[in-house]
Image 1 (cartoon, rainbow, N blue to C red):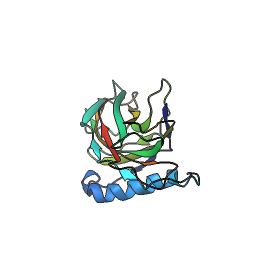
Image 2: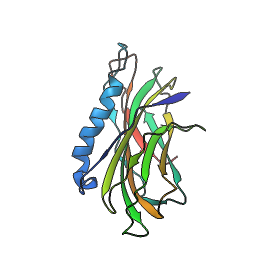
Image 3: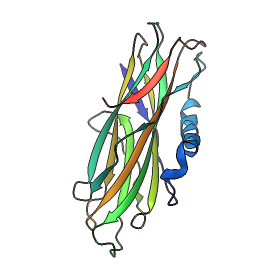
Image 4: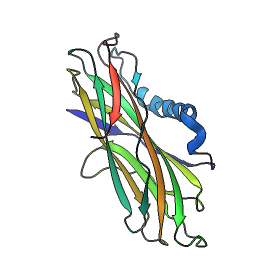
Amino acid sequence: MSHARPLLPKQKSSSPSAWSTGPRAWGARFALLLASVSALATSRPMSRDVQAEEYFGAPFSLSTQTAKATQRVLIRATASKPLSRSAEGEAALHVVARWAPSDPSSPERPWFRVSLHEDTPFPPMGDPVVLGNPGEPVVLEAGTSLFGECLVDGACEWPLAVDFEVQGNVAPGVVEVEWSVTAQAHVVDTDDLPKAFAVEISEP
């Protein structure tokens, strides 16, 4: 069975061009986020990493009355033929959140937090970050490691949950959320990359 091990989320405020920085800037942050996971790897042989195409979830709005929302993604590693090796990897979440109060003149701003993790009844959550002024983007990032006895015998799957939570006891309004997930994986106990080894992210 495969397992996802959460990492400490990285969360920070950003300029108005937060989402428009594009794949290059987000790719650089993704590499830095995953470097902390790779540093924990053992000395076992492993193939090079193969990166999945970034998955963009549908944007949505989360009200302070609803407070919580969960999205789910499935990460899959495949090869052209069965092989007796396990696959491991890492995944990263990128979120841009904007506060839209019902009363734009209200000075109150709620906190917001996110998490990327294995789908469990008691998920870990990142530290809350106070949102900016109305319409101001705030960037939040989180990551998780993909471990387990997951043999690449046709497909190796890691179902993950993406949790979003906004503070509920503040002035009414909604948080406009844009989010994406990217991932990379490798095969352990071999230096050779299996033929047609690929990683993809999709809805469950």
